Structures are given as structure tokens and as C-alpha cells.
Amino acid sequence: MSKSLNAANDRLTWHNATLIVRRHFLVLKKTWMNSFVWMIAEPLFNLTAIGFGLGAFVARIADRPFIEFFFPGLICSSVMMAAYFESSYGTYTKWTYSKVFRSVLYAPVSAKDVLFAELMFSTIKASCSAIGIVIVASLFGLVDSWRIFLAFSVFLTLAWAFSAFGLLVCSFARNYDSFIYSTSGVIVPFALISGVYYPIGSMPLGFQILAYLFPLSHGVALAKDILWNQITDVSALHAAALLGLTAILHFWAVRRMTKALQR
Amino acid sequence: MGTRTRSPSVIVKGLIKNFGDTQALNGVNLEIAPGECIGILGPNGAGKTTLLSILTCQMGSFEGEVFVENLNVKKNSAEVKRRIGIVAQDDGLDPDLSVIENLILFAHYFNIPESVSAAKASEILRNVQLIDYADKPVDNLSGGMKRRLALARGLMNDPDILFLDEPTTGLDPQMRQWIWNYLQHLKSVGKTLILTTHYMEEAEMLCDRVAIMDHGQILDLGSPEDLIQRKIGAEVIEFQLEARDVGYYVARLKEAGCSFEVFNSCISVFLPAGANTKDVLSLVVAQRTTIRKAGLSDVFLRISGHDLGHRDIGGVHV
Ligand SMILES: Nc1ncnc2c1ncn2[C@@H]1O[C@H](COP(=O)(O)OP(=O)(O)OP(=O)(O)O)[C@@H](O)[C@H]1O
Ligand SMILES: [Mg+2]
Image (cartoon, rainbow over all chains, first blue to last red; front, side, top):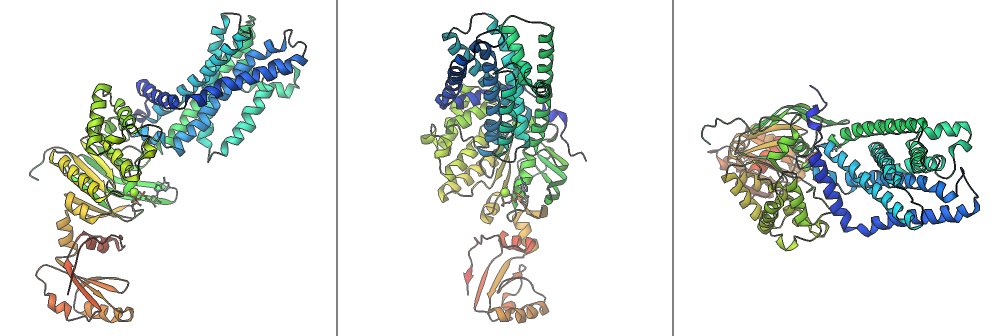
């Protein structure tokens, strides 16, 4: 007798997934101040402290003022953080602590519907934080081109990638402390070496290779290429790498979490 | 019940479920007819909730075959969930939503339009006397109110089969009575009901058949009357003894060919219909003797050898 589930049981129905996303937004609306402060205030302080504060001491970097160099990376790393935190702590809470997933799974929805709703929700939330930063930055005169719209394809992909990463971490987590490893061991260190604050090329080779194993570095490179209008063949490689890494994270996370939810 | 040509509502064949080393279900076989009300009795940890979780597609990995409304739960869980109502042991409500949102959002997944679901939710909330709490967060409800809301949600999609895991645990007497009436009503309109309970009176009153479960197996199955008659007989005599006398009287009863069980220093003797009560009474000199009608509790104790902790059948002292 087969212990595994038949494929038909974890079929994804987009309609169901969007209904679940609607539920998440309904709840978000009740606590919107929370998320708003988080989404806008943190990047604003980042931009001010690092971009203008620290930037005042850095003459030029990669041939441009520091704040300009910093801006694309700031959006990318903020998107990463927003997506990761939502789909790790947020998802884990809905799964284990508040048991929202259970309440939803009494309805005729599949585990995949629930997981895609998580991915969509945290991707949308992370994209909203990108919009927030862009709005704030445009007040400082940092956004000067329509190319910012093109750059959102990168931000969205990054958001999806790190939403998947958060889910993947959930599937391994034993309790909330487990996320300390992924946050302090992966997210924060990689934010430091992925070309957000300085060019990757200025690090030792080993670190450069390490950086490019992580989606963020490719996202940052690609966002810069788009915003600075310097798209080359290398940009295509970054795009391929970003999409490839996103796909790996996505399928791995969905596979592990589907199993976990079906018990 | 008359002759039934419709196929069973639920078919369970050789169901096994392990949690690591714990064998929660250990070969369960069961068929439930449409319109039947079946009660699952069993001590804590018997496997009742696990069985219901699998039947309601909340647990996907198990060995054996399970069909609900002729649909294989391993292959058609969404379709099965469309047709059933679930009232889980721990309510399983959405804590981030209000009372009425819990119902309306749930209805969305069944493609019930909001204009319909809103009216329906209000009607059901009025029924379970929660209408005044419609806009309150679920967390503000008492345990019994959450129980009623869970029932309300289980009814939102007009299910053909309703699964209720300890539906009346934690409810006050009025609400319990209301739920009993409501379940009787659901039965009368042809719904299939599958419930677990620790209350024998509930099972005797509502259930056409009762399954007694322990250690992940169904130990016996039948109508309450049938089980009582088969396993116990008509009457029970309880002798409350000094602990040191128990051995002596056990020997005497054995000699006389009586069927009985010993619980601590109390011996319960089971008498078939028409047996001579006086003969048995003359065998034992007890501190206190009670004669009463046999009930499901006795069956339960007999079969599982555990004390359920709920002796709710009144006795006559002699
Ligand atoms: N998620 C789980 N993980 C590990 N073991 C479990 C899990 N769920 C149930 N069990 C074990 O399976 C067995 C059956 O549990 P179940 O909850 O089905 O019992 P029950 O008959 O519903 O008991 P109760 O009357 O207390 O509700 C128990 O031994 C329990 O410890
Ligand atoms: Mg239980």
C-alpha cells in the first residue's frame, strides 16, 4: 500500500490560492500600521543613515556618488528582508502557533494552495516595501528614469526567491529559535557581501564566488545594470542565475512544505 | 432502517497510522451507511481523533484504504472536503478573524457568493446563539462559544456528512441539549453523522451504532442495545467491598459461573435478562450493594478494561 499521496491531491488551484491571499490581506488591514512602519520607516532610516550619513565620507564608488551606488542594492536587500521575514516567521506562525493553516485546510483547498498563497502574499508585501522605498527615494531625487519599472521585474523575482527561502527554512524549523540560524547565518552575512554596500570585486576571490552562489548578488547586479542603463551579456548571465536559483529554492521549498502540511 | 441500496458513506479498510513509534491506528475496518449516526467511544489516546483526521482529509499519509462518498481520500481530498462538515476536537478556528469572518471566508472556498454566505452565516450564528458576538475577534470567545462557532462553520456548506470530534465537550447543559436536538434534526433530514464522545448518554441517545475503540482498533461495533445485551445483559449489581474480601468473593462468583469485572474493591456482576438476582445477592455480603440497568458504560468498561471516568447512569440502592 502506498504511503505517498496521489498527485491529484496536491493540485494547485489559483483561485483558492488567491482567496487565501485575500484572507491574509484582510488580516493585514487590521494591523496595517505595523507593516507600514516596518516597510517604509526601516528603509528610510537605512537610506538616511548609510546612504547620506556614511555616504558623506565616501567620495565616489564605482564612479558615482555613494548614495546612487547604494540605492539599487538597498531596494534589493530590503525586498529580500521583507520577503524572508514574512515567509519565515510569518508563515511559521500561521502554520504552528496560530494554526491558521489548519483552519484553512478544513476547506476544500490543497496544501499547495496554502503554500502558493504564502509565496504570493510575501512577494506582494516585499514588493510594496520596494514601492515604498522608491517613493521615499524619489523625494530625495534618486529616481530619475522609467527604468525603475523595468527593475521591478528583478525585485519581484528576488521577492519570490526569498519567500521560497523562508518557506524552506520553515520546513526545517523545530521552533522559532531555528530562524536565528537562517537570519544570522545566511541572510545578514549575505546582505553584507552581495554588492549592496560596495562592489563585489573588491573582496577576495573566495568571497566573490560565495556571493554569487546567493540570489541577492545577482539581483543587485541586475538592478544596477538596469537602473544605470548598462545592460550587457553579463546581465543576461545574472538574470539566468537569478531565475535558476529562484526555481531551485521554489521547488525545493514547495516540495518539503507540501509533505510537512500533509503529515 | 429498511433496505438501503445506496453505497456506504464511509468505507475504511485496513487503516494503519503510525506517528514514529506510536501506533495510533492499528488496522481499522469500518463501513458507515448513509443517514446513519455512528458514535466512536474510546479512552484518551484510543485513536479517535486520528481516525477522524484521516476521514476528513486532514492527514494524508497512512496505510490502508479510505473512501468517503465513494471518493478515495488520498486522491480526491478537495472533492471530499466539499461534501463534508468538520467540527474538530480543538475547534481549529482562524484566530485572526472575527466570528462572522470565520464563516464567510470559509464559505468563499466553496464558491458560495458573499450575498448568500452573509445571510447564511447570520442565520447559523443566531441558531448557535452567537449572533451578538458576530463582529468579535474569535480570541474573545469562551471555550464553549468557540465550540459552537466550530459547529457553525461545519454547517456552512450544507454537508451530507458531518464529522464531530467531541461536539459537546465543554458545553453547558443548555447548549449540549441544543446540540443534541440539532443533531437529531440533522439526522431526521438524512445527514450522516460521525461523532466521538466520552458521554455514554450522548451515544445512547443519538447513535444508531456505536464503535468502541482502544489502542487504535475497533474492539466492538453495534447498536447500543445490541452491545449492552450482548456484552452485559440486562442488569448490573455492584458490590462495594473491603479490599481484603475481594479475593474471596471473586472465587465464589467464579464458582457460581457469574460474569463480572473487578474495579479496585468493587465487583460488578453482569446479569442476563431473566437471571435470578436474589441468587447472586445471596452470594456476596457487601458494604454497599447497588442494582441498576446495564448501560453503555458497562459495555465500555467490559470491552476496554479502562475506566472512562464518566459514570452517568443512575443506580438504585438496596
Ligand atoms: N501529531 C501527533 N504526533 C504524534 N503522536 C500523535 C499525534 N497525534 C496523535 N498521536 C498519538 O496517537 C494516539 C492517538 O491519539 P488520538 O488523538 O487519535 O486519540 P483520541 O482517541 O482522539 O484521544 P482523546 O480522547 O484524548 O481525544 C495517541 O497515542 C497520541 O499520543
Ligand atoms: Mg481526540
